[in-house]
Amino acid sequence: MLKLDILVLSVHPDDAELGCAGTILKHIALGKKAGIVDLTRGELGTRGSAEIRDKEAAESGRILGLAVRENLGIPDGFFENTREYQLKIIAAIRKYQPEILITNAYHDRHPDHGRANKLVEDAAFLAGLRKVETLDTDGNIQAAWRPKQVLHFIQDNYIQPDILIDVTDFWDKKLESIRAFGSQFYNPEWADEPQTYISSPEFIKVVEARAREFGKSIQVKYAEGFTSRKILGVDSLFDLR
Image 1: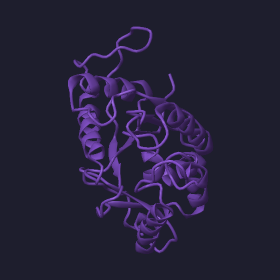
Image 2 (image 1 turned 60 degrees about the vertical axis):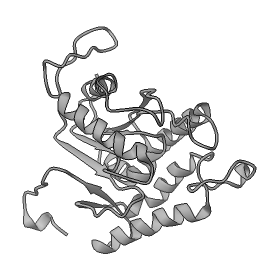
Image 3 (image 1 turned 90 degrees about the vertical axis):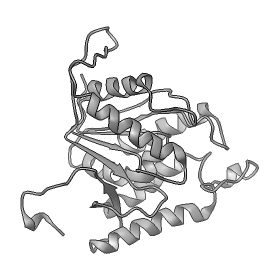
Image 4 (image 1 turned 180 degrees about the horizontal axis):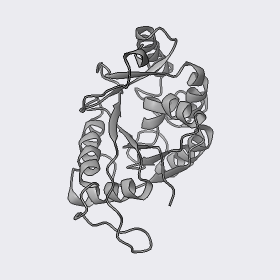
């Protein structure tokens, strides 16, 4: 069994890169094991195809140094918070037994993000109930497992963070992981494809501006923000910035 310290469960390939790639990179550098499980293949995206996104996600995973990257194959766009999809996510959580789970924002301009947030949060709770049965790939009943923390990265809306992580040293590598999705973000080689909100050069500038805004709050250059429904604690006041 491959046990992860951090598991990111996000709805589209590239969501994790935009929302928390710096945090992933930072913790891998600290010796932690991290992985991403994408819920969908992003097949409804205006540019490219599901097959192209699969290759891009694999390349980004290599850049990030992930221990694992998988895709649950949940239908893009039209999924609901159903028992079927909850069980898929529960099985993934139990498979990797993460201490920390990270998922999409509470709400966002893309409706999939908020719906994925609720789906993953519900599944994370149910994963800790031993009477909810799921099977591993060998047909064995999986042990119940509930992550210690469930955090949500901040996407397009101006959600205020509960916690900020300094990712200054990992910013360039984060951008490299985002650029692995060449079909989705600004790329002159895709100039003949339809242009979208995220394919403009300005979009990445917005991502950087938000990271700079968060960084300013804790006196660093770049930071990533997260929210939590649970009150967070620290061992000492001197751990605070």
